[in-house]
Image (cartoon, rainbow, N blue to C red; front, top):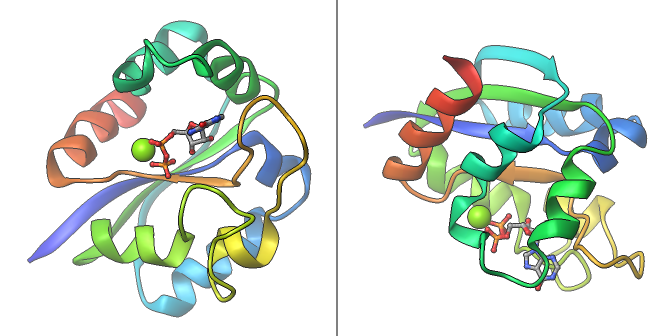
Length: 137
Ligand code: IDP
Ligand code: MG
């Protein structure tokens, strides 16, 4: 089934001029960019986006990081793209993310309070629908 998912190039990715490299990998995989914009998200938007993590110790640092610079928001489309982009991105911790993935090839531990891992991708059809509404409506 053709799906849509939310991909974010996080502030570390934009700052390190990796937006093009990340989009190149997404396009080379064959997914379609249905919409794209540069956003400076505020606390309200990010609290909604990361509501599942509101009780985590890293939540304040996560919001601070996500507000540290602009983010590229992408509405991405394709067959099984939700699962497919998560595989392309690699696991959350870039130190152990597999080589060949975005996080594994381009990310590492910088010793920061929050894991800086370049990209976000929705983790389920329900999350994708919820997050696309937050970022694109
Ligand atoms: P995901 O982005 O791979 O789906 P989540 O568990 O949903 O990972 O966490 C959201 C984001 O919060 C991560 O991408 C990362 O930036 C940050 N994060 C997750 N776990 C930790 C942690 O244990 N310490 C610091 N930051 C974390
Ligand atoms: Mg997540």
